Length: 252
Image (cartoon, rainbow, N blue to C red):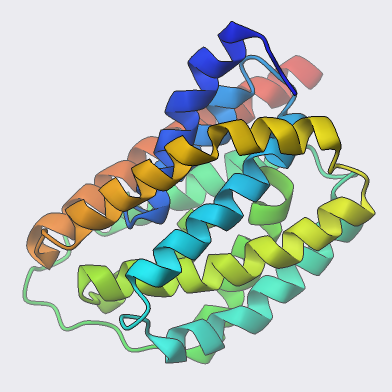
């Protein structure tokens, strides 16, 4: 188990970001891995974070158990599995920085493209083709860089689902993704007793912050919820662009 106080000074806010993200503010969890990577390697940060995410998924699923759009989950699930399979094969070959840059450009570009969207514009309808495309990208970026949220949001946000349904559907989808990733991480040798012990220490904070996110989402209207999610998505996109570009420049 990690005992360095500096690690926990960074890890606690990171876990809280994940909790709020799992509670419904999708995108906020994207800050978690970059924060933890300030004090430990990205690979170890992902290994410590994944069991915490799995616990937060359980809390989120309980909270949103009756508010899941199963059609969207069914449409997205095959693509995420394809993306995870590609990530498993290419994890050692694709620079994390390149993935971060790609996801950042997608996230920020999507928000900018929708800035002038009319308030009265009708919601988009679920579409299996779009779902497969964005879910494949999301499964891949989730596995390689823990950044699967923005691509799925590009597909789901235009549907203007009620905030709890949006949050519940994202939670269900990524609960499945994280369990599959955990099995893949074991196969890749990234799960250790030391990392799991550190995860356990952080779990109470993870649960409390997830409940806080759920509490907030259930009290926000769609008119307030989606601007917040879009703002978070844009900020996370900028952060990923910065991290990705910086990483690629350093490796050049």
